[in-house]
Figure 1: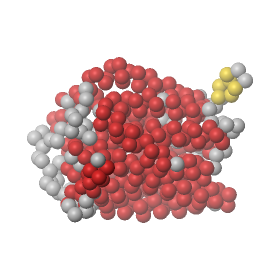
Figure 2 (figure 1 turned 135 degrees about the vertical axis):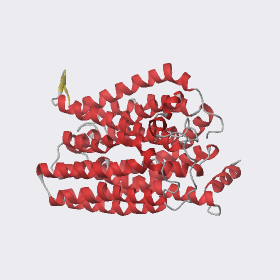
Figure 3 (figure 1 turned 180 degrees about the vertical axis):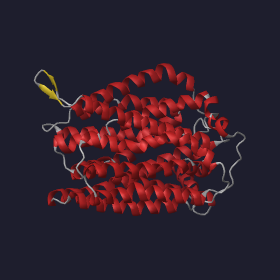
Length: 438
């Protein structure tokens, strides 16, 4: 049995076949993307912007800008469907995205300050992300032909484990440098160096994305508005997008607020956080076989519902991480978060394809990317608005609950309510995917 399983993995990633080589390239690109994303978002972006003079609410606004461009995703097919060969177009626009979103954003705080800096950051991030939006659905529409249903579950499981290893090791190395920079009083410079290294990795990711062979795409029968409205005729796809929207909203709601809370209010160091993030290597390797087994037994939707239920506990635990409890409470919280997030990312990876027809795939994937952006915008926008409105601590008896802690508790409550509704109203209507969808 073990030999048979090893044989299946070898077939999936065999470099002796065109399909296997393509899957290796896709896997490498996803690992590189995980690394440069970790180094240019989350705690490192929070620290970079804090060093550049931004406060928590302003950080929420700036980091929401890429999500605003997500409303343009549905028009991407009108652009991409004009081309039967898209490699040059996809590569050019993706390069522009990295140049503006990473390279330019890194340089601007060294050249400008004050309100003009905020305006230039918004312009660079918005323009870069608009370029990415126009071609983002082109890459999965191109690469999904190398990931048939029968191997997709195993591919996402392998991808999740490798991404966790790459992200954790890169974050740990960068965190040691960031703490040294913070102590030296030159934090902005060293965090800028980290972002420049991430830019190099982003270019390598782009190279890996462009290696697989590109085949002609099936021509679309619809045009204009009728083409863009095609997903509205598929109820199961639309219901799947509700789940996608909810996952993005809840998983990103406190993405930056929680990091700012740990760095500013609790006083946790970059290095300590990254040591905990490094544990993601072992946690993901430990729990991923269980998530894969549950998926093969229960199906994607039932397992994802279990993820929502478990995820609702994470922000509640995080809210109780304080200056007095962080040394033991934060490890418990992060390890639990990593175990649940492994399942969440595993299930989320297939949501773009599980109810997507093979015809007009670019259109459906563009809708999916729009929903991802809108979900993230809803989550981070809610957080930014909450922190602007609720800017004072809440006194509960003798306990002071900061706005960040209040936001975490709100996140947990909303996620739990959605999980209940998901199980009662949505799960039965979604049904189960075909057994071949692994």
